[in-house]
Image (cartoon, rainbow, N blue to C red; front, side, top):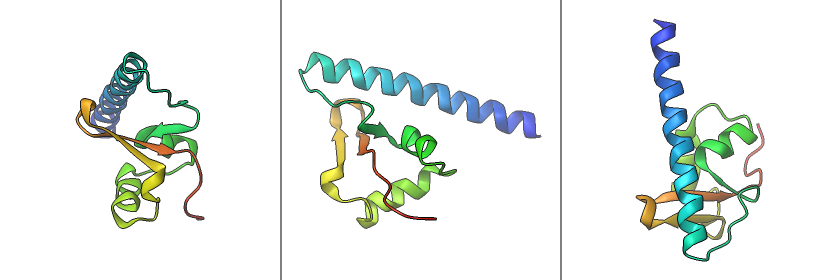
Length: 91
């Protein structure tokens, strides 16, 4: 059972990586410069700050824990969100 879950997780992570690369390409084409070490996808944010569940970060965005000025939504990529790379909660 664990192998199936890991395979699904790995596929989801691969898809997220592809989306992140598409986001960077679209931003470059549009002449918008977001440094990807300062602005992270939700997945990358979780990796950097050791958060296990992306839904937690999504909830922070919705509830305003992460200030709106620190979230950029890229509508051309189905609403992909970039988050300013800063710790917003202490665990």
